[in-house]
Length: 308
Image (cartoon, rainbow, N blue to C red):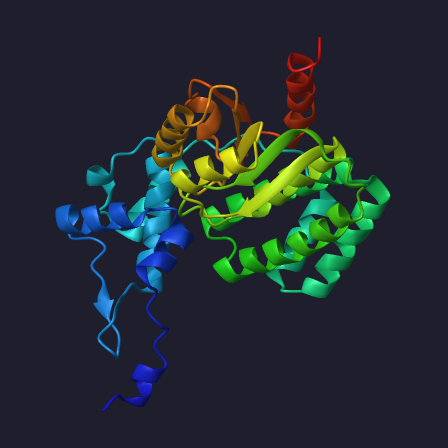
């Protein structure tokens, strides 16, 4: 019989949840388990395998260091304290000027004030208009939230609260835009195991403002289905979004495979907050790391496909 203390233990996380919350794929976790005996899953009261919150926090730290060039075999056996010291030794990126408005929004996320967050975002949207709101408010705020999550400054549920709130605001704004449906026809999605769809919605907003015709497939789409949908919908462009936590090597390998399977006339645009998109260029793929890169990309496509 379980003791009362046992019922107070936090639930174990499934491997799918760990993959989503750390950016490390299931295959990577299993390889590490065989090669380094870490992370070793535990068993819950029903005998199901799962991972503790402490393991997830360490995996987050490992992912951050590996993204900065550390080799797994050199750091995976170190304690959490040693990993934190390594993280602190990494030169910090130049600090952006303080933005009281952004800091205030992040504080609303941390204190779980979803209604106030929705109201503040809606008011900013009305003041700025959708294009400026996406570039000047949503883009920087999304990066700040992602970086805070990777450092452990925000819990997973707090990041989800932000995402759901912002998605509601953006969907409402996009729904009010005139549906001009001009070319290019853009198919928007993410690769398998990339479950962060906020970048897609932000890109859809910018594309809709340019009058492009958008087909949003949502997240987690296998490459075979992306290719089939692009052919069925006669897409001119396949646009994919990659979050900060998505493994760079998986992103580049997927883009290379997708490029070989799509007709050359179908462009691939890769955007999102993942810095690897710029560092590791893929032939035949246009990296659009900033939302402001979308209007020039649309103008370039239209100029290249102008009649006559």
